[in-house]
Length: 76
Image (cartoon, rainbow, N blue to C red; front, side, top):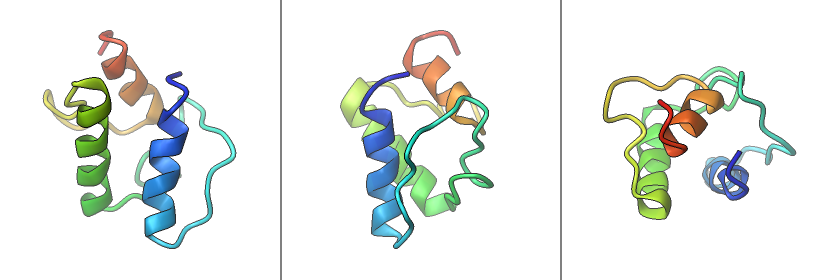
């Protein structure tokens, strides 16, 4: 898992007034487990594209942390 993915997610959670996550697991769902809404998913997309040069949502919906990681690693 990319080491700064947790930082990116926690920055978004912090901006929304949520507590930071201590760790991520591949099965965590972006909406249900991390509490992201549509705007926060857009911010996540922009931050990941700026950091990695990859639009993780280019081929459709990405629902879990594991799917995000697979896209970032070129396996999705």
